[in-house]
Length: 262
Length: 296
Image (cartoon, rainbow over all chains, first blue to last red; front, side, top):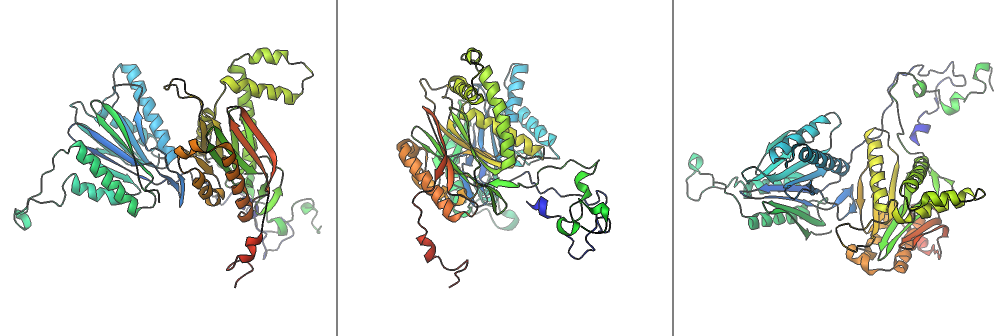
């Protein structure tokens, strides 16, 4: 619409003749692109790793603005699920179309690795490859915050978090997406025991930080549920359902729970 | 006409503005659709026990002008899938041609004696009949609604990544291929959408455009979740959709009281393109206060 009518008549100009009208005779002004190729589909994800398992979780609401697109749009993807020894799960939050494209890219990459090398890719290798996949689109990024979960060679829980252009880091826990700022401090306190001190250890510099320990699966599942029920209360883009994937040496187990739908 | 012959026959600058040479400048970056021109408004759809019902009105607007009042925005792909287009109408027509070619290719490659049938078709058979026979050939083996949805999602995502979007929001309604992991699985009702950015999602009920605000809340009362889908029958679903078309006609200024409605079930597609909004009552308008012409 605008394209047609923006060539507004020069009301104050000399008019009538195109030779006398001050007109852009060359392609001087760059014409602006009104098309913006990204959108934010809301939602939140988190991952926690422990001594022998990793849990990834994400809500299943998809939004555009104040609208709810659907109450069930998974953000967690089991990578190369055709391989029974696959222990990789990718969670993506941000622009959903990019998220799905990224999950499919990683899925083919991991499959190709298996076909070419005859073995399942390690999490470390998959994590670095994912970083390269993201960095490869450095100048037109996948607009997502990705978290990759799995088990490392020692069988310990592994968790890698990414920014949209591929910076990555192995961590114990990470929250991403719309409610990341609500969930992450909670995780810092409850997983890494930040700002928790040994009772009676003194004051000031004497104060002793409580040592983090590997958490039990039950504890982590409860933390995840608490984190999301709280986020649902305070963030409008989070809700509807909670999808959890628990990665153990036995396999990848998917758990679904309802969240508030308001 | 003025005293300058070189201006004759050219669009008048005082009316149309000076010619913007950047539109035809060589060596410039190629530019694409920046905004839709002729547009269709809402498409709404709803899943029920054994299928899906989908509807869209027959209007193509030019801004606020109701420009074309007999545009069919629902398109049957085969016996298992119907598409509903919101957004730019020319992009819809482009996709329509593209999908026609795809359907023909699919019907040739998906076997089930498509070739035999085609050769036995008499030379006098009309183009329409031939198209019809192609449609039916695909019923057994061709692309189901989920396949078509994936195809369109890839297409639209690719186009947005090329900065040349197809300015549509499309609903794909129909039946999916049965789950290969479940023995004796039957085709399930399928409803998903894809938009100009390639964002794709499915739900028991979907609505594009204004319908997302006006119709979706009504439809969600009918089918809040997948469990509810299994409980409602075709009649309830169609009634709900018709009610929504009425609400849209009352409240969406870019809508029309003539619409198309399609029902996809295991028996095939029933598409009607000359539905009307029945049982209108504008009495509620009397009571509206606080905006428009009634300010007190």
